[in-house]
Length: 268
Length: 44
Image (tube, rainbow over all chains, first blue to last red; front, side, top):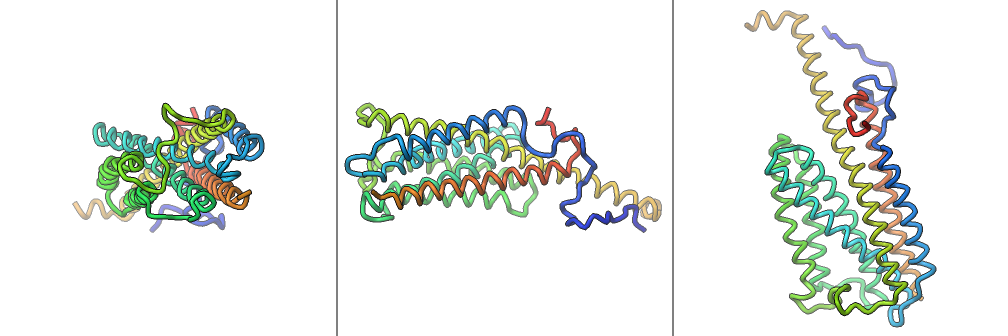
């Protein structure tokens, strides 16, 4: 005997609302994220304008230099995202708060996305500049290892394990993996390779408009990454809530079913 | 000069961002519909 009736909606079972909701808009947006989103769009449009139109070609790299307006901001966002994962992981292990675990996971996903931008734009820049798309240089290799390590981190987060065990393992991996960010950053100093040294330092010589475009790209990617991080965190949080609501409903249904059939009295 | 590489790089980033952004937003809508408003505390 069942206490529930199937809803004739025609939708997939997983997509049916668990509880009726028509008051708040069903999405992860808020006033703050809308403002941040508008700022990201404006900054990205300006980056495109300066990166593709207003900034001049470089003497030796010619127009290939325009790829640097995506490549350099992408690596900065990658570092920051993986740092956020490490800090979130450490705070999760220290405080046991699931919020930090979700922040760590959201940041890692964004870091992997921007790391893929680093690898692809760098490779496309390498062909006209170095003559090859790829070489197993220390910086390129360590960046690839970084990308694969965080893919592994994301895979660990999807393992079929008890949530606490999974989160703890992911947190340890999130902290350990950050060591490779340091290796990537200093690889151009520690090993001689094809990749140039650090772009920005005390002796940086770059055309004013080019430098401005790099920082414009950096600002636009940082704002965009923050916007993505907030939305991705909310999606993870919602997924956890849906899981809990579903579990509570399943338990209530099972309890009602057991009460109706009188199994509780007989088993005791 | 080298515009094909530039177009490839900008295209890859644009498509990557568009796909990921739309996936995140769609997931948010799909999951939000399954919850009562009081459980969406970030909307307060």
